Length: 297
Image (cartoon, rainbow, N blue to C red; front, side):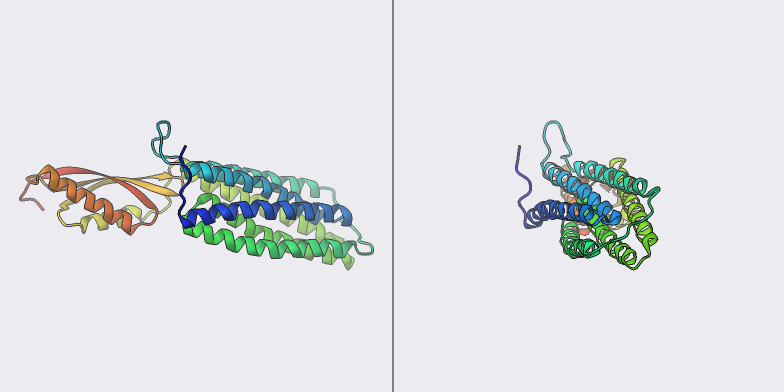
């Protein structure tokens, strides 16, 4: 089995995934322990969320390495859709985590903090906010560099972690001043936030697995690029096929029927190069050449 793509952007993406695993391991331990010590339900819920993040980051790292493998005898179009599969599992885990947090809130009456308990919870939540702001920046940049569905899903999850930890700060701070119901509400919002993020990730990955093209203008742009290539008389059918975070395009063009096979091949190759150059997501183009009457067009 070949090694994953060693280009700088891909190497950086893998580094980000491994960093996410270590960061979420540390945050999960910190928040669960601090949640147990302080008795904060919102911090404990956020800690369970970080445990979910640890699982999803680990899964994302494994699927990332698999998705970078080239085509083989069993997978003629490569392994790109493994990213969509991983994103789907990430979304499901997030949705389950959010549902679990909401379930834990039912019947909750809030807590009253004594001594340094509130400060323990606030300190852990503050560390989580800073760590996730940094991790969001790293993951978002890597996702843009590689157009990775998995990294985009993780970037969104890291961004949500910033807000969930901010809700912990609000909830714990309010409870410390006697407004225990605010922390119950904050915990509920954390659950809803994580649930919504999970469902959105599921929807996006499902679109990829079912070959849905959300870019409605793609065909028009590809048509215009192909028509501009010298020797192209007409542009026929165009179909895009998602391969994870990248696209393969199958298309037909018409050229002068009196051209030689070599001339038709050269025009098709020029169309392929022009389309790939014009659209970052497209990495493979298959062009079928049809002959037209020499006097037409």
